[in-house]
Image: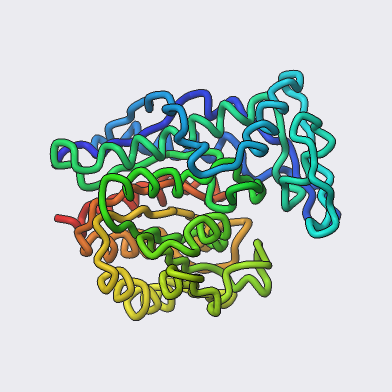
Length: 343
């Protein structure tokens, strides 16, 4: 078996959010550099993986997914002093004015939570994170590559065209999917993060050429709260090409795999995509401090094996996962499972 192409850039470690506000309390920020470092250590120690630095993003790759005001805001944040952190003041969007992306005090116009700070280092880190995702998509099909991995950090699946939040700045999975859609006719995105990928859903909600399936915690009790309900099934020509599977607290591996077998795999088979983008959140793990599912490392491997059996060219994009002692173990277990299923 050829080594699995794995993409990461060291500048992704320069971004270090210090804390976030959660229900009025200031807590240590879960999206630390230790997440990427745990996975890096695991892939560097495993001969299955070939660690590579991505090329720089080509002009227009991010702009095809995100609005110009959002890009301007991120560039405005690079004027902050290194190490300085700015937390947007967020108001209900319906009553806001237009906002000025060159004024950092207006950043809340483009932000939907209190946990996603702006810093001097945020834009470069997010740009390289997106570059990893694009490279993972680009390499599929080259020299027989059927599986690739983007160690994207910060994550991306909550970012919409014009809003950031949920620790996400650029929607890495959407950038990968847009590239694949240009090269291939039909693309499926499967999001297995504990949290619903509201940003990815919004970007493809009217697009019949991209199937979006998300298996996640019930948003009645879990972030992002305002999206991810089963009745959200697409709109216009995209009606029927969006599937949300909201699972209850305490979901274990057996329940999760049944949902995968009974709903996710049949939907993917019926759509018959030319490629799969997997938003690989690992916060379904039973020790994760952010989620309350009960999946084990063995369950994550089995999730991967079932998806690998689809034998689709697959770009795996890292999303959440916050129990850093086992994060590398869980990432490699999932990826080894996909590779085993593809054989």
